[in-house]
Image 1 (cartoon, rainbow, N blue to C red):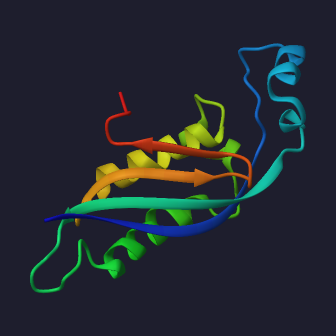
Image 2 (cartoon, one colour):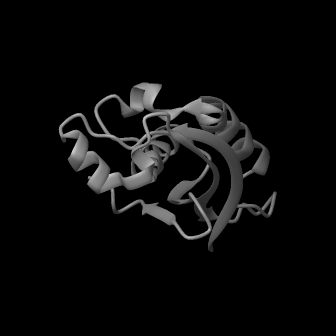
Length: 138
């Protein structure tokens, strides 16, 4: 039997949406107020969904302690209270929430081995959320 587990986490970070490949006017037209030179912040809500067989002994897809520990060490400590523009993950790309979601997915997919990673979902605001699943990474 395959089951899915979704766990929710929160962290805060700031960013400025700005592409060095575009002019100042193009950046302003594309990103609007999110192109503010001083940046802006969000309280991100992260959902991690994993799947796998239910272990007959524990009755779980994976131990929540293992998932929480991995997310704390590899995701929250890395991104919480950071300016995303200054992190190596975003050197070559604009730190949009789409790109943040992809970076988190890749970290989890590469390092969390206790269950199969199905998807990562992020809420940036009440109006914006982004989701990346295992068949969507190229």
